[in-house]
Amino acid sequence: MLFKQEHKKMILNGTKTATRRDWKKPMVKIGGIYKCKTKMFSKEYFAKIEVIKLFKDRLGNMTLEDCKKEGYDSQMKFRNIWSKINRGFREDLIVYVIEFKLKKEKNSKKHKCLGCGNPCSRQLCRKCYENPKTKRKGQLGHLMSLKKKK
Image (tube, rainbow, N blue to C red; front, side):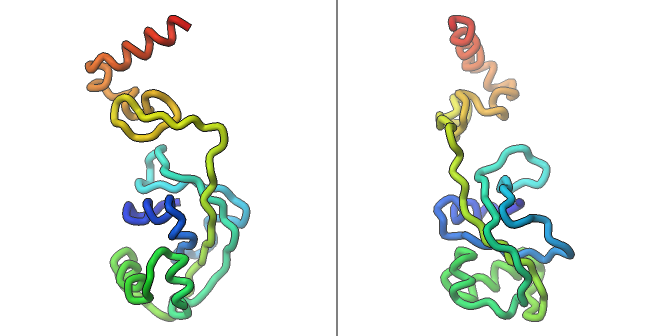
């Protein structure tokens, strides 16, 4: 599922547990596990979520509790963000409400990538592994020599 960059931290720390989408038909299903991304065609994702509820609702029916599930402490803040993302706020708009929980990745050893320093499950993330600048730094050669010794 695609999210704005500003939602990434809210999802990871658990303050955002719901999202509303202006879809013609549902693009997710209850029980489905989805990768959260900030770029549409990227293979990189920052989290996995499991959909626990899916229903339609009028955008204008949102309560303060609904806004908190979206990661905002007021209805006005949610309306402003929705308007910015969706070019306006229509109270009569019927949207899909997706409630989710963050999935913890099992058996994934978290390392810091030697190239960029971001958490990854390897010593070099795919992006740095394929980056010629990383290879010039000698980090890739060092990792390859470690693999050969084993």
